[in-house]
Each structure stands twice: as C-alpha cells, then as structure tokens.
Length: 428
Image 1 (cartoon, rainbow, N blue to C red):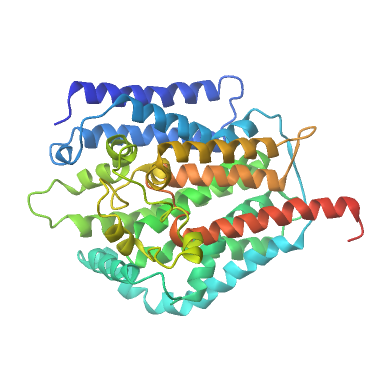
Image 2: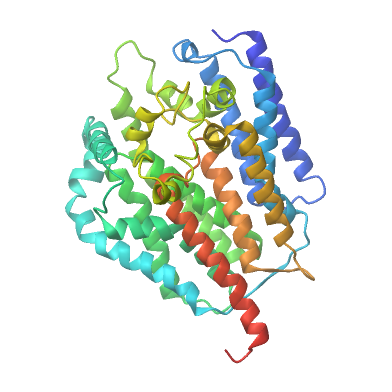
C-alpha cells in the first residue's frame, strides 16, 4: 500500500520536472522538442500517481526512495542536453546540404510499404475491422504476434517490414526537413507521408500498441524539431492531420486494450491497466533499476553488436529473460530508457555513457550566425526520439532497433562529410 512518504517522493520528482519546464521557457518561450519531452514526463508522473495509489496495482510496487528519482532526473536531463543546446541558440535557418542522397531512404520506405499493401488489404477485414467488431480480436492478434516474437531473431521473415523499421526514423526526419524547403515536391511528400502513416497503422492489425506509440512519438519528435522552420500554412495542415490521425489510431488501440484486459477476473476496470501502462516506468525504475541484482552486460541495448562478437548472446527477449532470470527486474515491465542502460551496464556505467555521448553531441551542435547544419539537427532529433520514445517505456533502439541506430549513424556521416566535400570541391 502506498504511504504518504511514497506520494511525497513522487510529488518531489514531479515538481522537478514542473520547475524544469518553467525554467526551460523562462527566456525563450518557443515550444519545441524539449518542451514536448518535459511535458510528456509530467504527464507520466500524473499517471504514476494514479497507479501508485491503485488498490489492485500497488501490491506490485515497493516503497519509493529519494536517490533513484534524483538519478533518473539527472540522466534524463543529460539526454536532453542536445535539445537544450538548440533551444538556447538563436537559430533561424537550416543550411540545406543539397544532397539527393536524402531521397534514398525515403524511396526505400515508400517501396517497402507498397510491397506490403497486398497483405494489408487481404488482412484488413480480419485485422483492422475485426478489432472494432470482435471483442476478442485484439487479444488473439496480440498472442499471435507474441508467438512470432518469441521465435524471432535468427532469420528474416518479412524483408520489406525489416527495411521499413530500419529506415523509418531517418525518413521522418527527412520528411519534416523537406517541409521546410521552398522548393517542395508535393507528390513525393504525399507518398512519403502515406508510407509513414500506413506503416504506423499496420502494427494495429497485429494487436501491437508499442510499435504504433513509438512511431507516433517519432513523428512528434520530428514535427517539434522542425516546427519553427515550417510555414504557418503547412503547420496548420500538419496539426489538422495529426488530430485526425490520432483519432483514427486511438479507436483500435482502445479496442485492443479492452480486448486484452476486460475478461480478467478479480481485476480492475480497463482504465486501471491504461494508467498502469503509462505510469509504471517511474515507479519500477525507482524500485529496481539501480539495484537489479546484476547486469545484462549490454544484451538488450547493444544486442546486435554483441551477437556479432559472441554466439551466446540471446537472440530475442524470451532467451534474454531466461538467461537473466536471476535479476530482480527485466523488460517485462517498463523502467524508462535510463533503466535499460542502468540494468545493462550498471548505474555508474550508464552515467558514464550518457555523459560521454551527450557532451560530445552538444560540442558538435554549433550554430553559426543563426544557421544550423542538418547533421547537427540530426543529433538533436536522435536525442528527442530516445527521450520521447523511452520516457514511458524502455530504450526503443534495443535489439533489432540497433539497425536503426546504424542507419542514423550512416545518415549523420553522409550529411557531415558531404558538406565538407562540397566546400572543398564545389563542382562535385
């Protein structure tokens, strides 16, 4: 049962983010990616209060402590340093790299979606429509997807889907950058937009909420990053499209949630599971992330890299949970992206990683005369994606998500050194 002390500690943590949000906008009131991240953390804290005091779920929590919340706050602020650096810089313009190579990942994403359209259409009635008409459809789709995930990791069963998932974050970044240009290819942008949206809807048919939420948060990261550079007319169109899309996607997600939890005996209403789903990460991090009873040695956050070096690295979450069954917590519950790194590398190791990467990142972000380069914005975008995607759940670039990091690294290297070549060889 949650005590007054537990609620006071959670209130203290919430207050840290409220004060941070106010100070963040004290001199510069522009709403941007950092604003979205801090606002999301405050919302998650609100749901943490609800689930902490829920008579059904409070038995799954231990009493809260002060230091884990301080550690979590410091780490999340470290992860936000690139966004804070941009927020405090007087940037008014993006330097266009004029690289046609930016079209490559976008075309691949579009082709991958077109390759999946026949399957989507054939499964539309049994997938999307059944979620709205059959109370058990969401659970059945989820269990089927869960069975596939348990055997995943050793082979590629759907190449277009794999390529799409690898390149989607890069494509969202490029999409919003193209919206800032004066010379827009409207037809291409419409195709890319449809590809992004269809790719967001496909997981719904499999009863998977996580992939939909991840894609939605990625879109928010891209939009909030480029918002100040987009014309007011296009910004209004984006807002209308965003509200419409949210309504369309929210209906089947609610249906999935009701289908999965509504028939459990002696359990709370479905809303209780929703509050627990959104608010659990702060509490489980506080309870276990800094004292998990061991480490996973990077087997989640850098899974693919380790698999190249060691054959005994788990290929999927089922194997990993079995290997580290001695730990006090695993990825069956949410502990935020900070928790993932703390459990993988120890709290000290995670702190060193966060300091090293984010200090390096802010040193790279050097706007000049109000102009910022695209590869510098890519670092801010990555930081926003990590924070937005993982503030409620886990590090979303884990396991096969490592391939997405690889794609972002390749894009960063190309943008950075392509610009250098243009300066030395203007005719290239």
